[in-house]
Image (cartoon, rainbow, N blue to C red):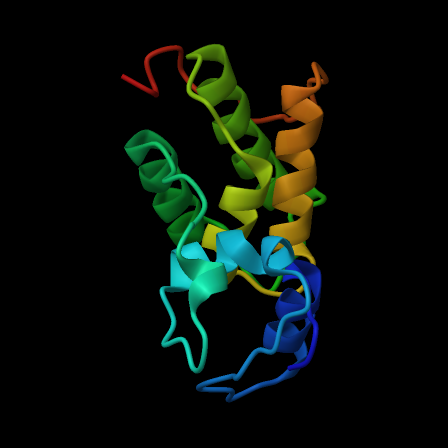
Length: 148
């Protein structure tokens, strides 16, 4: 895959059934750095672009993402219905608990752990919206002690 960003990788994963490996050529390392951080791929050639990786996600965020990975149906969009309620509910709970959430790092993690299509991109957009002060609607409200 030549010169992708994380959205392009998500589209490849969605439409490329049975892909077991990819070779990525980048023109701007920052566009895929969160994905490289999460995937920890074998780097061919000069690896100087990858000496500095994205900051690690908070362990609580990683655990929440693992839970969402097991909970949501990845054949559905996270833009509506049960999947949206689950994702937005967890993100709002983390924000309310003052857990830092990073859109790009979470998108990279999602791509590296089986999220496909536009869902990793949509996850990042929810995080950006929440970090910007918006409160996306969700029917599913988590208990106040969820993060504890």
